[in-house]
Image (cartoon, rainbow, N blue to C red; front, side, top):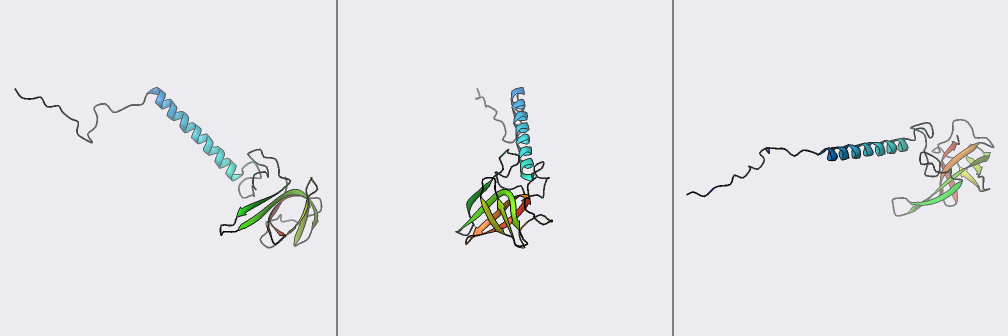
Length: 157
């Protein structure tokens, strides 16, 4: 009498019945894919600024300058950030009315009474038309040695 030998499947050989997904597993996978697509669409929309300030290519600004997240417009603020070289930079933001403007500076007064004068240089992003008293603007600037240099002065829409 010879002993019986149990046949073992050969590694890498196709199975007799490949595993299949149940209806429940398929529906769960489709739901997850739809949710990921929706979240991805929202992220792309928010990062391009579409519908907020005229679409891509316009300054969207930091949180608080308004936008897809529904933030209120910042009146004025100051943030200290790392400069990436072991030091720090102070970033300023302000929304308000122009009280004085020249080719090299602009003064802005916010609703809460805060006033600041900003230096304008060749790198400052600003509207093509000259700024006038009473114009509503949003300013983004950096502060060094007590002087605030505007990186952007844009009209409020």
